[in-house]
Length: 84
Image (cartoon, rainbow, N blue to C red; front, side):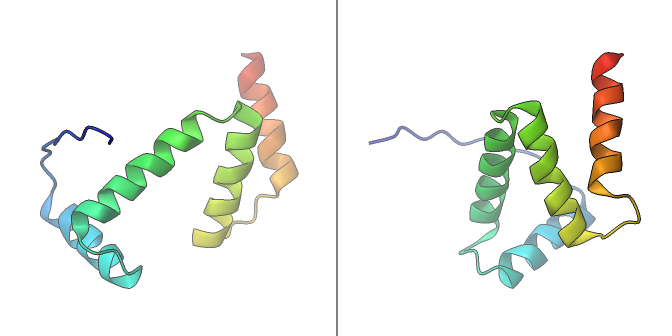
């Protein structure tokens, strides 16, 4: 059995309302489950190699807020940032 611990945090009213909305929209049992899922996603993304992590974030970004920037432009930007 995995040992669990509790972590307390303070959120702005706007953040709490957004988490509430997301929880209902995506069918989470409650806000805590939505926050746990978001943290797990973030931790799993951090464990990916930088190139894979960038690609996953690009896909997520394009699903949420499509932009005029192409994937190849974002990859080029990543290479530029890695070189500095």
